[in-house]
Image 1 (cartoon, rainbow, N blue to C red):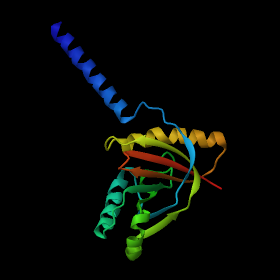
Image 2: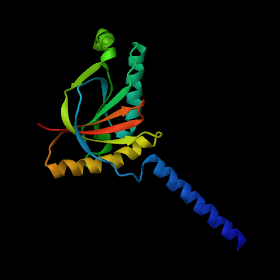
Image 3: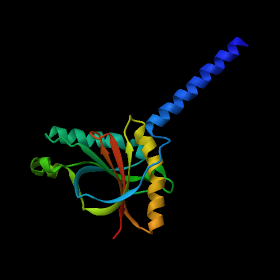
Image 4: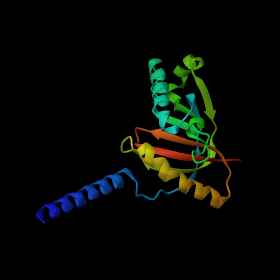
Length: 182
């Protein structure tokens, strides 16, 4: 009986630790959606087709290529073209890139021909933010963010022109963005 009591105590402690860790990661938080202008952005990027879970290697490749040219990007930006609930993982399309800031633009212009470059104009958007706590945040964030963004856009009758995510390591947050079609 004493052993069973200790096993139950250990199980309860483990469950509480797991729940606490998930709460720390933001799993149980309610995300607030807002409308704001986002952009403009200039990004150096690579296109990728395949599971969105494999895009971190593409981002790493773009960051490394820019760093080799002496350009320190601080914001990642991923444009996601397909809904993973409607498109098979091997056919998901994305552009994975790094935002080129104003301070780096003159230096970037000298090497821009080595990169695919895309400009995102300033636009009205529906956004929500999710904290980056560790690598798991990049998996939990989309699960938490897209439902309230979709609900907000549908409630307002918005058509979505583009979906993208901004990864801000300095501020430790991911901004999920639905660009409203004009």
